Image (cartoon, rainbow, N blue to C red):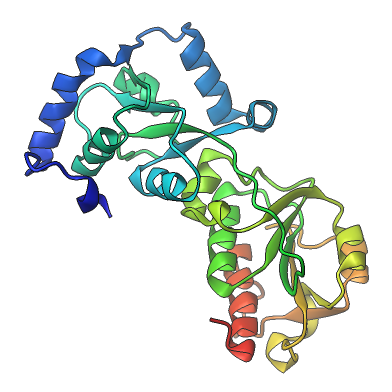
Length: 283
């Protein structure tokens, strides 16, 4: 992906680092945590409310930023650390040469990134909104998922399985947090994600069959999933609430060998979604 951005004189990571150091004089260099730009970026990195109010979020890494640019527009701001950056990050920065850029000391930059081994490039972007299709035949409904990595993985799987929309309860973690975006690997840019829903109401309004995943349900492999289908996955520890289970059409389980009783929520979602894809031969 990055090759399309490479200038002819970039031959190595060492050369990329050299360019970063020599271009840095044209960047705004911020070294104080009291700076208004850093404080705002830190709020966006750490707090859902700040992201919601601003309608903005942070993307970490070349892959996410490239996909955002392809799907929407250029970032509002690029953020880099002092010192070396990867060749891919350097090339993308040159491609986005007109975008304002700020540089932070390494430790300050690390406070903004969701991973320990960042590619050395963050982007401030407007949070996109993906419209629902006219008909939702295949849905994933999530109740109170807490781990952003789990949620990101589920969104990535849902996109791959051909899900039309994902609905998140009010108790779910933020789909637009940097950690969730990292886990989703751009899924949020293409998949409608509706946050803050009443799960019972959503199930009541869904026109097809809805399957609540529980330990006491019937085998997922015995179900006819060729019709409109929604899978409901619950909290990593507590599972689904009683009201949600009762609102679903049926309870289903994933048969497994004893003594194991359950799977990680993201793994369970992947099995259910791709069983439906297998039955329907979705492409």
